Amino acid sequence: MKIQPLADRIMVEVLEAKEVTKGGIVLPDSAKEKPQEAKIIAVGKGKVSDEGKTITPEVKVGDRVLFGKYSGTEITVDGKEYLILKEEDILAIIK
Image (cartoon, rainbow, N blue to C red; front, side, top):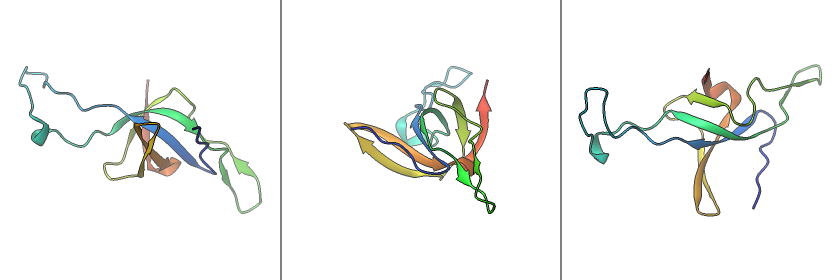
């Protein structure tokens, strides 16, 4: 099944939280924070302005991004979990 986000929505695959800290401490599942880093899988055509023009999203498929902690809607497609966000929920592109 393929999904194409509408308007300014973006489909991302959430990247797993790290299991080991920089200091080498192994974190159990209960101590991990909700991951906030993701890879973009699909992008909508963009938001329509009040003048009727389509504003193209700043992100593209393949970008790695940071998003708000409790943003988006979780979905499952073909057994894989994804998140659908609005472009405004994306905080930064990781370069």
